[in-house]
Amino acid sequence: MANEETLILDGSAKSKEIQEEIKAEVEQLKEEEGVVPGLSIIFVGDNPASASYIKLQQRVCSKVGIDSEVVDLPEDISQEDLLAELDKLNNDDSVNGILIQLPLPDHIDEKKVIGSINPEKDLDAFHPYNIGELVIDGDAYVPCTPEGVMALIDKYDIDVKGKDVTVVGHSNIVGKPMALLLLNRNATVSVCHIDTKDTASYTKNSDIVVVAAGVPNLITADMVKEGAIVIDVGINQVDGKIVGDVDFENVKEKAAAITPVPGGAGPMTIAMLLKDTVRSCKNMLNK
Amino acid sequence: MANEETLILDGSAKSKEIQEEIKAEVEQLKEEEGVVPGLSIIFVGDNPASASYIKLQQRVCSKVGIDSEVVDLPEDISQEDLLAELDKLNNDDSVNGILIQLPLPDHIDEKKVIGSINPEKDLDAFHPYNIGELVIDGDAYVPCTPEGVMALIDKYDIDVKGKDVTVVGHSNIVGKPMALLLLNRNATVSVCHIDTKDTASYTKNSDIVVVAAGVPNLITADMVKEGAIVIDVGINQVDGKIVGDVDFENVKEKAAAITPVPGGAGPMTIAMLLKDTVRSCKNMLNK
Image (cartoon, rainbow over all chains, first blue to last red; front, side, top):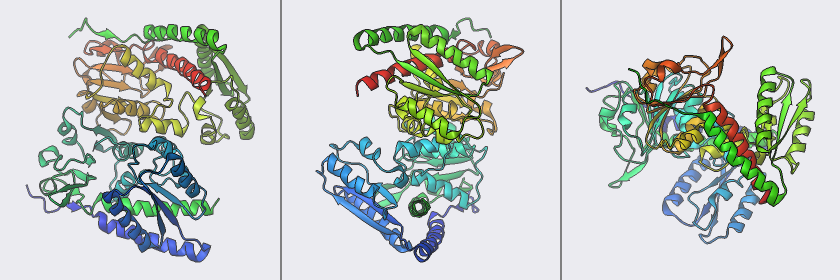
């Protein structure tokens, strides 16, 4: 059954709205406080996919007036030197946010590095302190991707309280924090993953399905309830094209609302990064 | 249909087994290292239920040779004085574990106090750092009740990987950490709570149901699948009798295995407290 009324959840448009708001805030901070929010990205090695994502982040920062710098470090940097670089950023008042591009090389103790970020500048919420605040519904930073999904849900006035929601994927940076954010808003949340016996038995009964598995076409039309809301966080490259985890063309015929890929969750992630940088800048000013 | 084969998950017996193991470890620590593990319990005010629970904790500590002390503080203690008391314990090498009996009086900033416990002595895993480690499947302390449920599951060699599990209740100290522990073992986890539309639709399809809602008779036989494993974390007082959240007599006829209340999850919680005190003592010796 074709559904001509399907709402396309337009992450690109909503992200631009947020970017405009942030741009105005950044201008105000400059005029009234004489400060420019600053983001530092630690990039060890030269993975091309990472390099291209960082370029995108920097471009969007520059559009809204946020200062960004990449701390380029060689693949063979010692753990000690990496921690020293991190420490400089932790203590630099002009740096409001610190991102560490993962993965780090094998000889580096990733856990140790993450645990050494100043939690107040840890916009990705990699530090256990921040992720713990998420469990207890505190007000620390949360990972930008699930944060962006919630912001998109809010932009479309979707109320999740009491809704049956399935999250597909249980990664530390998307699936688990996504489930916690939804649970904190009193959705009924199920988390499926690679070891789930029958993912369809969950998704078919869900009002909202959030997919972050990294598997193209994982969610097909027969797995989705008529009138469901489907949010696709997957980003996969198939035949040189970017696709999500959802069979968009067919699922959109059944769903009441759906995110496209690209143009859905992705742009919202970047918007959250900007928003959190400004938030950190304001927090640091108020200290 | 009567099920004469239902396995009663005997938390009391398993807790005693663990206590015997801990007693031996404590003796060994005393002989070989000359140390006695120490637990301190901060108790503000005089809530009778708290007082009686603390008495129980101390009795069990004493049975296995762990030193325990209660830091009795007046209801009207200032936040500053409370933090000073906590700081003494944080820095006292003879104190391996610190418990703060909640709730604290209204004039105390509970979040601030919890955030001030030394995470390495925070056996209840109230501190965001510890709870964050749980999200990322780290190796910090986890709240004793869900830890005890996992230990009970392990004692009976129940494999949760790929199992459909419903957790009923989404509190910060039981429901959410319980869900995370199960998710980290690759169970498929659904979390139901007061805003869930139809809890039975989840529990009826679950291989394992863990209930921590604090509502007597919440889970009835019609809500449970034939052959399910039912773990009741509820502790309610009804007509002077302690009961759980599960209609034990009727659910036991359908379940393959079930915990009694009392004698199920409760004694396992205490066993975990002892285990974690010894763990902390060993960690501190190895520093």
